[in-house]
Image (cartoon, rainbow, N blue to C red; front, side, top):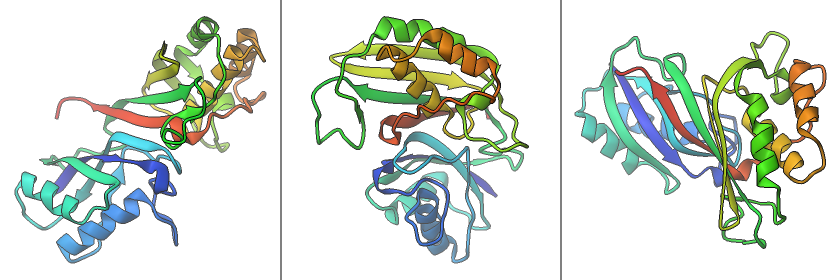
Length: 244
């Protein structure tokens, strides 16, 4: 049987989502819990990886099991073995055709930046930029990323990777000195959100122009964006699927 879970986690004390030897990861903690419940090794499959320090609001993963438990009991059982910085929001049975990664139709990320004075209580959760940015210039520059593009200049990739993605939404809002970037697309390559946000920060700081961002985008990887926003402000907000 296949179980789909929605999980929320504070990424600040993790070395990313994906399991790694001798490092604390979200996948590692969840699989340790599932091994205790199932009394055998269980591999989970996530909608995608998040890097060290990146947070998950509604990350999705699935696993296969021989154990029969009511859905609500799966949630309680996994949470019983979870550390304080991971919480299973939902667990439910799905068809074996469902795959957390390959069945996803779009994803939403949010990135938070503070233009205010440094706040040590926010440092793991909001990028402490500490200077005023030109929000209107950033909003104008954000338009170049909308639609389908080859984002090779704005992500980490190998020569075999497909870097063509469609960005449906890129909103930028500011309230009380906190800037929120919202990105919704059909998929994101590694570091893609952080490179896009990093480039837009440079525009807001008046260090580079919108035209320079577009030049890098149009180069399809020949001219790389070297600006990468810090991981602490990044959240995987939502993973969307066709109705299941």
